Length: 154
Image (cartoon, rainbow, N blue to C red):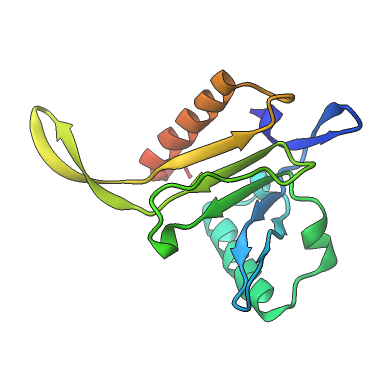
C-alpha cells in the first residue's frame, strides 16, 4: 500500500521508500505534535513500542530532535487512552494518509452460533484521493485488521 506512504507536492504524489511513522502526541500544556519514528518497517514490534514510548516521553518533556519533526511519511493517531471509540483524523499535508485508532472495547460477537464478548477497536483512515482511492483504503484497513487479529504476525 505504497500510495499511503509519502507526500503530495508540486502537483504530484511522491511515494517514500522509507516508512517514517508520525505519532500524534497530545502535549500536557495543550497542543499536538507528530514526531516520526524513522525506518519503522525495519524494526520489530518491541523496538517500535520502545521507540513510541520514547517519543511520547521526549515530546511531553520538550526534548524532540528537529529531524523527528521533519518527515513523517504517514501518521498514526489514537484517542483510545481517552476512552474515545472512533477517531476521524485529518491529513497533515503534504502527507497523504493518517490512520486513527479508537479505544479497545468489549462488543457482542456471534461465534459458532453463540453470543460472546470480544475485544474490538475501530480503525479509520483519511487519505488524499489524489494519491489513492476509497477501495484501496478499504483494503489497507482490512490488512491492518488482519494483522491486529493475528498479533503473532507482528
